[in-house]
Image (cartoon, rainbow, N blue to C red; front, side, top):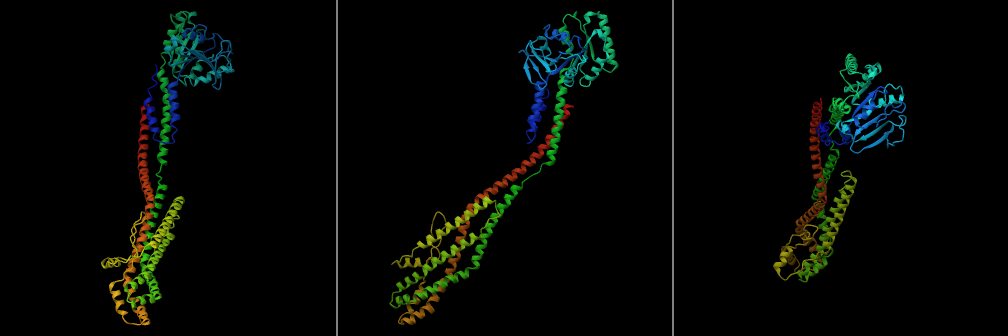
Length: 560
């Protein structure tokens, strides 16, 4: 029996190698090899002259006299395959490989059919089940269809039994030429001198010896056997002759041919892949660069605005003090009247009433102005993909609008500090840090609420100044002396408030924007991980290719 598993290790190794590489047509090629391994049948061609007795011998082999038509007319002879099978069946195949069940009464002509196939449950066929026995038309019938039928098998046949009628007296020219032809395809050939029952044993052996001599003369060392109806068991003798053929060698020859071809093809493909593969991280590199630009851009934008705020601080303080000065001058009469009447608390309240709204509105305007300035500066075009750019722009604009709305609502609702009879408490209130008061919300960090500090020395100054002066003089002195002192006393605190408030607003906007940018940073980290993994995979794949090429070469050596 043929060992069909002899090359399974190589086939499995090839499958493992193919699994490492995309684009290899591995499934198809390995399926073809497995198909050959599982279904390869060793064709044993029974060939010879017309009426050499081939069909008679085969009928004896399968134990069914008369099964194959003997001495057929040359015009009706057709190649017939005999295969061992427990489940018997019979089919006729046309030129396209289509098959149909054989009908007993139907004539099958070689003009219409390529060959017939009989699957027979025969004890003798079972003994040589590695072989498909092929009964062929006589090669000397002189009919084109017969020559074509033989041609279909010559390249496929793995072994040949050349049957010669003893009447030929040995190997004639036609038979010798045929043997020379099939020797190009197989070295497993044997010659049978048939119908030796019609001659003596000595004559039969003489003919056999003549055939051996002819073969040896042309360099062929093929076995020559005689067959006679006098033989005790012709079927057993035929099986004995057929058993001299090396079925494993025939199988090996075909498998080696296909496996070597596959390995050569695999090595070429792997060498091409090795030469052409390259590490492509372009898309990831582009994304990483864009993400880096966004992070850098945001950082630089907010830093730039903070620096600009410091540079413009003096102008903004001047803007606030000018408003306070103008408002105090406009309400000078009310303050002076309160002071002249001795109501210092009322005068102080009027000053607070004048200054506080200006501080609140000014702080609000400055804060919103800074937010608008940063928002206009934030242009993400070209920094990210279009869809990311749009999303990020919307995020920053929405944050800016929400932040401005929050500032406006909180500052507009801020209340003046309530008067208190407790002098210590009142003093502590007035000595609070000015600016935007602490407002705890879920959205922003604490801010400073504006509270104007009227220092005790200014209040005392006002008391002494307006002792017994007339109204016009008091007003002039209030405008020329008191208001400048109030402005001077407030100036450092106003500067601190504006600087602190501006920085807090920008910090808060930056913080809120950065929270939204976290997703970009996560994408950046993911892209970095993907890039690193891609590099690692690439290096591993390069090593795999080198190893697979080495494995293919090793497998090729094993097949030699």
